[in-house]
Length: 287
Image (cartoon, rainbow, N blue to C red):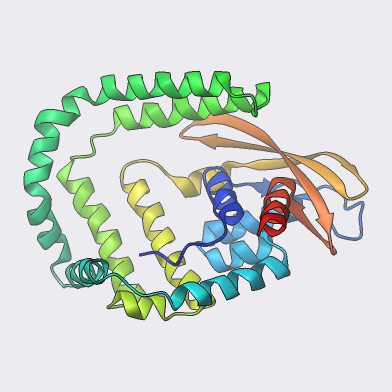
């Protein structure tokens, strides 16, 4: 279940914050736009609730939201591929069926057997190899600061450890995960790709929110508790001068302590992530 493509900065912001989250420590507001931590708090509250519409509205300027609405309407008018339409209808019919779990488990059982025989025994070695390549890329990056590299390495250790510890072919866990996806498909109540594409921006994000909540539950079935990470984080106002501020975010990812800094900029009476604004401004200048 997905909406039409949205603006890249927004997606980047979702991925960056969805992994970590935060709770705000009380800090005095020293600007008429309020405490810089408020924008982080609002974004995390929306993600914790699984409300992507509220998340975008809290993280992006109103003008960008309106641009996304217009872009969505334009994309909705584009023709739909017949093969894609058929695949969507087939899977939605399966997932919304009363016996969805049984149907899906039966359909994927041959692939599960192959996975257990050919892939699972090599999983630890393959993860170690991919982790090594990722570590080299992080270390050689000229864009990441030393602290950012350190935190990227720590995140890589946490996630790779989770992957190697998790038996993804476990039938009970898989059935539970499929149940979450089936429940989401029924809640979304969109039988065809044409019906999905006909939804306006707000309705599309509402359906995407259903999918997002389902993904969180699926990951939780395998021990990756996104909401626990969202609940664990604390923020601290590091500095604030005029329309610029820096906030430190501390959190736990899969039991591992993490932290990173967020640079914020005040614009039109609200705080926004500096990187998101720069990406938006850059896209506007080139487009």
